[in-house]
Image (cartoon, rainbow, N blue to C red; front, top):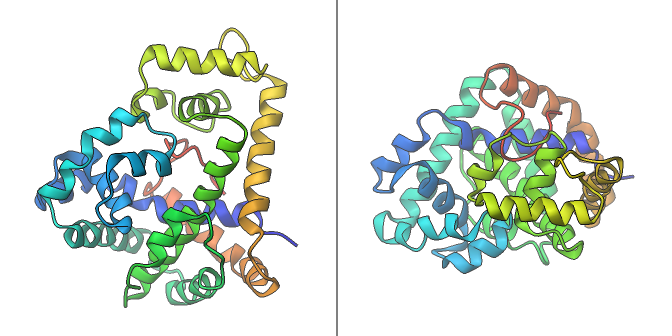
Length: 278
């Protein structure tokens, strides 16, 4: 028994609503931050406290270091950590409310909480940080909180697989673009220069994962699939039988919720997260 990919994809969609909220930039600016990007970096990393850029660069993996350094540590002197976290949670609540009006949000939140509280967080620093935050009292907040912990849990495992395979942040993003998983302007969205991007494709070409035109090869597509499969295996390794059973029970409802969010335009594909729709 394992955890199906569609479960993880649905979790990603529910979490991702905060990245695509049309008023995210304005809300972060209202509490003192400078624009969308600073809001993204600060709000996603604030679960760790007020970390220095070096820590966030390591945990986020796929972003050019200069992108993180644009936001940190300045963000911590411009807005209070509690205000940053509260703004992010409010964005999540409002976005989910717009797309999940008919979903059994309370049940999903309770079941997902039962899953994440049973997991081993060793080596999953970003997920553990989010798990340490107070659980929201409302169903929408609890649903997003639980989905976020699980999303970052798999994300931490994914970074471990990528680094173990010797795939740096630029190459990981370049491969996602070649595979059609990420948006064409992923380079700009993740802060890599044209030279860094070209060098990333050279490394991929050296592995025979892309050809000289930066098109993914059969070998590259198979390697990309193996990376996802390995991430799934590692992510599910601490799911006991009860937790795995819950993912099966929840899969249909979660996928339905994710597709509702996609149909409403709350989350669109492809997008910079490189995740496919469930």
